[in-house]
Amino acid sequence: GENVEQHPSTLSVQEGDSAVIKCTYSDSASNYFPWYKQELGKRPQLIIDIRSNVGEKKDQRIAVTLNKTAKHFSLHITETQPEDSAVYFCAASTDDYKLSFGAGTTVTVRA
Amino acid sequence: GAGVSQSPRYKVAKRGQDVALRCDPISGHVSLFWYQQALGQGPEFLTYFQNEAQLDKSGLPSDRFFAERPEGSVSTLKIQRTQQEDSAVYLCASSRSAEGSYGYTFGSGTRLTVV
Image 1 (cartoon, rainbow over the protein chains, first blue to last red):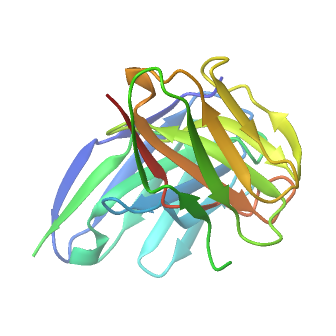
Image 2 (tube, helix red, strand yellow):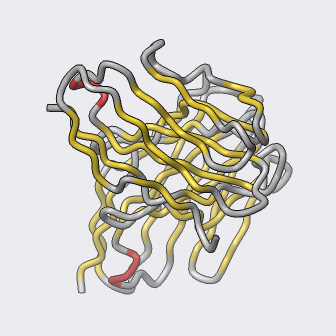
């Protein structure tokens, strides 16, 4: 089955700096890559997603890039704010319903 | 409803006890999913329903786990003879798409602790 690895496991950034989280996947048939943000004790919330026919997608301060050849995708958060502090999960899917998640990255934005 | 509702929010069970976890998906959502999230880990797929049909149960860890969605709306995840390794947060998600491709809406989960 699909194996998704996520790095780093923890990330501390100064407010206003950028944060980058990287994920790799094993199944070349994967075609859907969402990112979820989970605050402590709360539900995972979809923040951005990308499909395999697109190399990059941007939504305000958040962007995701996909390299199908290398089988990796990344989340970029610019101009970080304290409210960006959370656990971020990447995921991959080959069939548009079953998601394989990475282990998560705990992002801390220092004021 | 406005979101995916799960109950109970917290459940403490003695080892060997049976538990039932409930999920109320967003009204009209065709697809429903159950995931298990161990502490400090990402969610892991358990099972998938399209309306009342359970199309994929490949993630259920043992025959002690059983899920149903008899009328294509509310779903129940049942765990029989709970064991300590069952302790986790159980997340339910729903999607309006028959294939889930528009992205899940997750519930807040049920935190199960087996003592």
